[in-house]
Length: 144
Image (cartoon, rainbow, N blue to C red):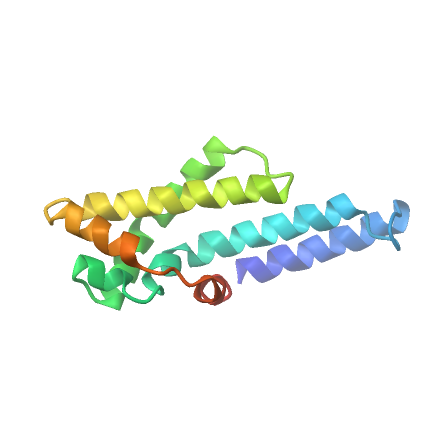
């Protein structure tokens, strides 16, 4: 529900600003980029737990169910998101977002590995590296 309020507020601000500052048919390109990056960032935060767990084979690498995977990943997605925000304080370009999301992904992966530190981490690492990550599935996971 919060995301819809954020989008609605963003559209109102965009409309008001486009009435006073015009560029490229009335909408400043930097406004569009800023709102697009904020929207993608919000989706990453909301659906971050699904990004790995939805990948075919990922939960099996840990010997857990899909539901356990989501529960475990959900337990530290907020912390990883905050760490990524602290690391990258401003997102002005797609490159910035890419760096932000990579930091977030790495944090999630490391925390999940640490959670299962009593298991054979070399075997888990080998299994994860053998996975063929599906970008289409990643996009579906982000858009849940």
